[in-house]
Amino acid sequence: MKNLTTKKLTYVALFAALTFVSNYLQIPMVTPFGNTRFHLGNVFCLLSGIILGPLYGGLAAGLGPALFDLFDPIYFTSAPTTFINKFAMAAVAGYFFYKKIDRENKARIVIASILGQLTYIILYLVKTFIEDYYVLNLTKVATMTEITQKASVSLVNGIISVIFASILAIPILKAVKFE
Image 1 (cartoon, rainbow, N blue to C red):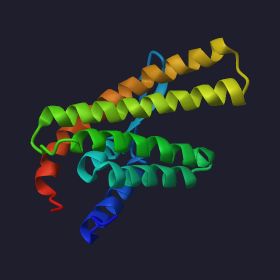
Image 2: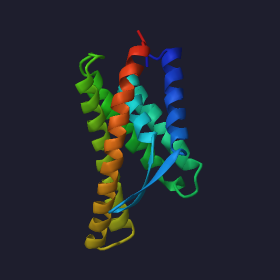
Image 3: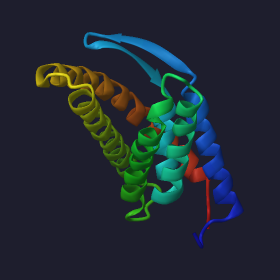
Image 4: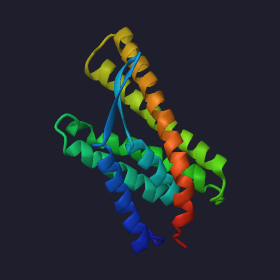
C-alpha cells in the first residue's frame, strides 16, 4: 500500500463507479443458446486491471459490481461471489499486463484482456455448477445443459468485452501516468 497515491485512489474510485454504473446500461441480446444482456461492466473491469494493476484494479473491479448486486434484490445474495470473480478478472489482466512494463504493446493488452475474461468465465461456470448441482440438487444432465448455455452466452459477451477493452486501453494508458 506504499504506492497508493491520491491520484491512484481517485482512479480506483472512478473505475469502481464506472463498473457500477455500466451494469445499468444494458443491451439485451438474443442468442441461439438463450437470452443475455451485454453491458460495459466487464470492459471496465478489464480496463481497471490493465490501468491500475492487479491489486488496485481488482479492488475497483470487485467493488463496483458487488455494490450493483447489493442494490438489486435479484442479485443481492451474489454480491460476495461477484466481488471475488470480478476482482480475479481484473487481477489476472493486470498481473499479466504489468509482468513486463511495456505500455505500448498492443498484443500484451489483448492477451491480458483475454486471460482476464477467461478467468471470469471459468469462475462463473464453476459457481453455476456448485449452485445447480450441490445447492439446487439438479441432475448432472440439467446442470451441464445450463453450464453449456451459460458458457456460450458468456463467450459472446467475453469476446465483445475483450474487443472494447483492448481498443479503449491504448489511449487511456497513454493519458494516465502514475509515476
